[in-house]
Amino acid sequence: MGKQKKDQIDEMSSEELDNTQEETQEEVMDKQEEIATEETVAENTNTEQEPYDVWGETDTEPIDEETEKLRQELGESKDKFLRLYAEFDNFKKRSAKERIETMQTAGKDVILDILPVLDDFERAFQTNIAENEADHNEGFHLIYNKLKRILESKGVTPMNAKGQTFDSELHSAVTEIDAGPDQKGMVVDVIEEGYYMNDKIIRHAKVVVGR
Figure 1 (cartoon, rainbow, N blue to C red):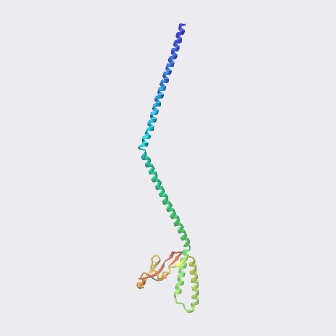
Figure 2 (tube, rainbow, N blue to C red):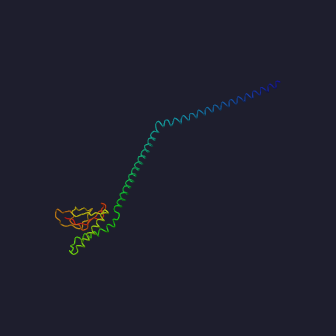
Figure 3 (cartoon, rainbow, N blue to C red):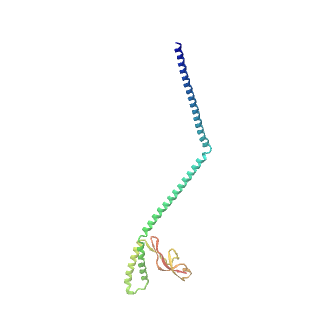
């Protein structure tokens, strides 16, 4: 009986010892968890404080510089766009003008081939024609006038350079003659008439200039 009681006491002591050890281990684990939690909070606190300090003091300048850089790049891009748009607009206007000029001067080469025929008619009219050829002369005038009307319908008009002030952009001086002070620098005679086609020069006038 005494032995049985002793064994019960020993068993209770063993259980209590085990419980004490378990409680000690739990306390140690709880302590470790508390320490770990405190360290994590400290780290997070430090991590949160650093951006706050940097944001308040030093990070402002890089952000401003970046914004200014983006603003400059935007301004440069806008300037390039405006320049390209202006160039394209000028190209369109130039192309349209060239197309109009091409249409206006279409057939220029043919006209230039016909003009010498008109010159021959005019030279023929300046010569003395016998009385018995007057009828032929009238027929030539009819053909000449018809040819002029056809050319005028195509926008071809003569310069009528005689009596004008000599202009190197319009006239080609073949020679100079003494023509008195009133005729100095003037076109005193036309060897070959110049012509416009829709207000564009297609042939310069060959002239004699007074000096």
